Length: 309
Image (cartoon, rainbow, N blue to C red; front, side):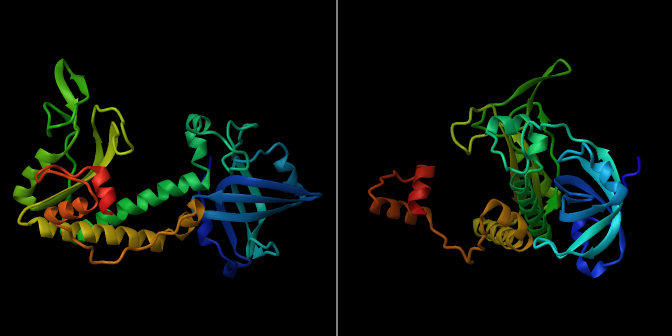
């Protein structure tokens, strides 16, 4: 089966009128009008309208939404209000025919509860709001990596099956490692500290595991952690690095994810630098002014930080 294509949908535009193109995607909508039909087709980059005429219309009999198609056709101007160009189909190849009815409606016309969506998670990824969350996450991780690499940090990968605890204060998931006791790593702490001896600045973005029940949204048994370690830096240098990461993440995500922001209904606003820096003593004084008493040396809890914020 030939699944090659000449273009992604976002690469097509009205200036290509008359040009023959080959692309693929899944069918979002089908409208039949006599001897003509209109398909709305989407791939990971965007959506376009396809006009089907003549004998090709018969190929659409029994074709359901969310089926995967491969289309060759010519770009032409469109009179549709949502598109400034469309594709006049020359050949349509059905790569995978979707079942009907589907367990959920990925377009979102029919609401599905969270249990049904999770049971059909792969199909739910065709919901653009859901997909946008993952695209935004990818943009955030890309920005973090770029910022750290530009600051001469080297990305490393540390072991995830370990022989003993690498950090105190967390319960471990135990497992049998060919007859020996082993654990899933809850932190790369020891490894990244050792790596700085020769590499000076290192970071890792990876999954880690803690055998703790989820008491809050910040307590997860499996989570993605951004771990950074550097030699010859003091705490002010560390704050500089962290501030750069935060600013760059907001800036890059704001600039490079306009469509995703529209899909989730949230505009990302870039915070102003430099961030205000508050000492521990100042924090205690401000909390005291809010009638929150904390003994010097005690940790600040989430509720304290929210009060300060």
